Each structure stands twice: as structure tokens, then as C-alpha cells.
Amino acid sequence: MSQEQDKQDALTHFGYQKVAVEQKARKVAEVFHSVAEKYDLMNDLMSLGIHRIWKRIAIEFVRARPGQRILDLAGGTGDLAARLSQAVGDNGQVVLADINSSMLEVGRERLIDRGIVGNVEYVQADAQCLPFPDNHFDAVTIAFGLRNVTDKSRALASMLRVLKPGGKALVLEFSKPVLPGLKPVYDAYSFRLLPRLGKWIADDEASYRYLAESIRMHPDQESLRQMMCEAGFSRCDFFNLSGGIVALHRGYKF
Amino acid sequence: MKLPSSLLGLLEVGLNRALQLDPDALERMIALSGKTIAIEIRGLELVFYLLPALDGVQLADEIEGRPDAVIRGGPFSLLHTALTGERSRLFEGAVEIEGDMELGQRVQRLLNRLQPDWEEPLARLLGEVPAHQLGQAGRELFAWLKRAADTLVRDGAEYLQEERRELPSPYELEYFMRGVDDFRDAVERLEQRLRRLQERQA
Image (cartoon, rainbow over all chains, first blue to last red; front, top):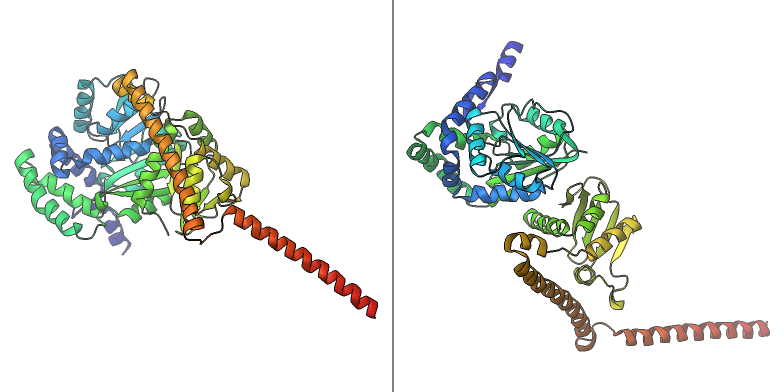
């Protein structure tokens, strides 16, 4: 009985498939190695360009100030880091972290090409066990990254640990549409059109099917808020963006 | 009633933008970190909370426990005090503070005196001169809005007092109150007189 239980516990989601816990990270890594080069282009297509607005709104809530130290987790191609770097200025620091070396490389090249250098550092790190001291960052952001992490609670706890007291974490992630009538359209789009787009543009249907499926398996707004509270964050709240297709969650460390 | 969270978010972004352009106000807000202030709008039965933090102020539609201070008022009186910073005689007492009085007043003063320097971000974008001109226009617009709100409140009061006769004017009210006072005094004198007459009979 207990052996069966153990076996059950050791499985996790990879989209709609069940895979062993130790396999998920490798499978997610394969997806992102595969899409890294065309990640931004696909994001634009997938969200009709709206992901830029979602990210801008997230930045608005970071309220970064000169001299601050900010960690952008799963920062991928550096969209958030570029804006944060301007906001914290020369005396501040932005750490762009991603578990995936391909994504990190694309991000670093992109930022350097745009002349964003000096206050950005690049770290290949696992969100579940962050290689930073306690009470180190004024803010931690993770945009479209949390759903790919195997153990989300561990990642949240790790984010809390590296935050300074008074600092906050912002989680931008796909969520459950709450606007009436939006769900059927959204489902049709993400299960029929999206994998095809993936095939045409990135020649990688499976990766984009994983993206659509992983979105559905991600906890809804209230569940994620609850998870943040349980991880020890205070004043947890969330905002729905675009009718709940995406939600921005926030929690403070006190 | 709760504000829709999208509106609350918008309000939070706007308020923090304004705070970031007024470093003094931002510092004062940060100094209140950890306190909770409820804003209650009477009539609409609307309530939301200001939660000052190290990064400015967070708005929430619910909190655990009780707020440290409550600022309560009708929509017009709150708008009026927020925009003009003065409390006209008509609305004296219309904005109430409950709980930690000092905290409530500090927040009220802070919001009243918020003077965002809109020119600064514009200057970075456009250069000093056009930014200054735009800033000037912005300030004039802001002042006009304040006057408009002020006039709206005054005109609204006048309409209710003079046209609809729903509310008394301050003079009428004073006249009435004096009448009540006179009447009360007269009744008291009559009471004394009656008592004296009764005593004499006994």
C-alpha cells in the first residue's frame, strides 16, 4: 500500500501526461532548449503581442527604484530584466536567472545587443533551491515560469527566503479565464491553432502542445494565492489580466 | 460593496505613480509601513484599504483583522477633501476618522498635499522646455479639476438648498437653531415659574 502511495507521489504533471518527478525537469528543459531561439516570436504570435502589455503591468507593480537589487527568475529572454535594469540604475542590480542554459544565452545576447550591460548578472539557477543568501533581494519576479517548476511550493519558499523583509514576489502566469464566453474561444485557440503555429514557425508541435497543456494544469487564481500564503507570504493578492487568461499574483515578506 | 479588482489595481498604479513623483509624500507613506487604513465611502457602502509598504502603497478590498484607522465620508465630501485639501464649512465633520486619529489625519494630509512633479518623467522623454510647457498645462488642468470639483460640490449643495429646498442653507439652519435655543430657554423659564407657583400653593 505504502509502496503504491510512494509511487503515486513520485509522479507529477508534464502537460496532460504523468511523468516521474525526476523526469519533469529534463522534459521541460528539452522543450525550452527547443524553443529558445524563437521564443519571443512565438510569444508574440501566441498572445497576439499582448504578452508585452502583461509584462509592462507586472513591471508597474514591481515599483523598482534606483539602487535596488531585483531577481528575475525564469527570466528567459530578458524582457523584464531589460526594463528592471533601467529602473534600478547604475547603483542597482538585476539578476537574470533561468534554469535553462539556452534561454539564458539567448537572453544575455539580446540584452548585450541592446546595450543593457553593467547592472545585469546572469545566473543559471533552479527556482526550487536558489543559490543566493537569505534576505538578499528587494523584489523577485517570475513571469511565465512557475508552471514549469516541478515543485511550486518549494520554489515559492525559496523565493521568500532570498527576499529582504518588506520585499515582495510577483508571479505572472497563465491562469483560468473568468470572463464569460472566453473559455471556449481560448480552448479552441490554444489546443487547435497554437500547436499548428508551433509546427509552422518553430517546426515543433510537441513543445507548443506542452505549453498549452501545462497552462491548464497550473493552479487557478485562488489556489495559487493560497499556495503563496502557505509558503509564508503576507498580504497575498492577485489581479486578472485579459479576462483571467493571465493573472499577476503578489505577496510580501514581513 | 467591493471595488472590482481591476479598478483597484488601476487605482493602485495611479496612486503609486503620483507618489513616485512626489518623493516627500512617498517617504511619508513608507514611514507608515505596516499600518492599515480603511477608506469607507458612505452611501455607496464601498470600502477599500490602504496598506503602506516599503514600495509605496498596496490597495486591497479585504484584510484580516481590523484596520488601524478608518477614514469615512460620502463620495462628494471625500472627493472634495481629496482634491481641495480644505474642509468647507458645509462639509465640516462630513469626513470622519475613527480608530488611530493621528494616523488617519496623517494619511488624509498626505493625500491632500500630494503634488506629483509630472515634469520630471516628461523631461526625460521630451527635453526640458516642452516638458515644462506640458507640465504647466498639466498643472493648470489639475488646478481646474480641483476648482471644478469644488464648484460641483458647492453647486450641488446650492441646488439642494435653493432649488429643491431639500436642505436648509447655513443661514436658515442658524436661524432655526437659534429658534430652538430660544424655545428651549422659554420652556425652561416656564417650568421654573410653574414650580414656583406650585410651591406657593402648597
